[in-house]
Image (cartoon, rainbow, N blue to C red; front, side):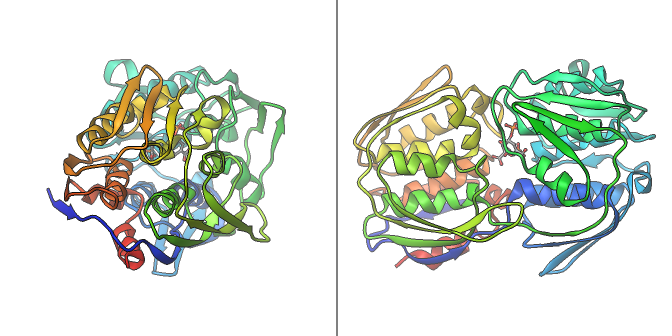
Length: 428
Ligand SMILES: O=C(O)C1=C[C@@H](OP(=O)(O)O)[C@@H](O)[C@H](O)C1
Ligand SMILES: C=C(OP(=O)(O)O)C(=O)O
């Protein structure tokens, strides 16, 4: 395990960064490419470890996937082109891979076993297994199918009308993938709008999906045609440099190629509400919205963040918490219990590690309360194997008075393999 020493940055962050491909869209592009008939080409695919786990699972399911620096090519042969894997399917650290694959595998006529790393082994899978079983799926696993390893005996599925008990795009997408194979029309109702990349991609691959208010209707027995997918930059990765630009003195950062799907732009709403000096130039695009963002050092004020905004910024909460330490007044983050079931319990890891750096932050049942503005000191911290905690602490180090030693920075490659390269590019 590596330890990284990071030092206070005195001269600001300046320059431009092209944000790598969106993780959620990259996963889905492989999945749809694999179940579609014909060739799918994917540009700006994120080569983070999580998306490589998705590629590896589909290769084991018999799909030919070529990878060059510029392009991923998936040679899909339709649903029936997927064959029984000879080895276990390893989702690594990726919750998205595990949950979405379950929805795909549930309807395919063969046996498969899905495993993941230690962190995946602690994340709740019952939220997907339970509705899939109601559709007729045969899934067995640890603690009655609550946790990986999970064994799936794919079978014919029937449609359901399901109201999601949690706002989760992964649960929604797993049911959608099962519904696409089922007999009849599946209806999924969301308690709150979550990211809609799966729905958008169904249309892009020539399928059909209808949204009526908060219900999504998916016709069964759908087939897809291969296409070209250009993956926009990941706003969840951009978030680290957006906050860095706002809190590091003397900074001006331009972020290009950022995905601006409105189901993902909660971080922009928060930056604006806190008073950040931010400019957004949206681009002409079909499907997923994109744009360029300029962020400058800002005078920030604490705010309350909760309700429908939470699913639009769920992965950005660790970096928002850091930003709040540099805002005047109190920031309250609530309605965010879901943080407890991510790669780590992100309420505990954010609060614990930021406290070590001198932040005034306390955990609550459903979020955290941060008192700003505090001057951060430095010290020894750990990512605990959670990529978003590792990146948040690396940005924190830029404003710490003393050295920060970060244990386990390698996990950052899960979603942003070029993070330190991009950070170095900006340091003056
Ligand atoms: O669907 C997706 O691609 C994701 C959905 C979110 O998880 P939940 O669905 O568990 O909220 C998010 O935290 C994750 O990083 C990616
Ligand atoms: C929670 C995350 O991903 P996943 O659920 O796919 O592991 C994340 O990227 O922050």
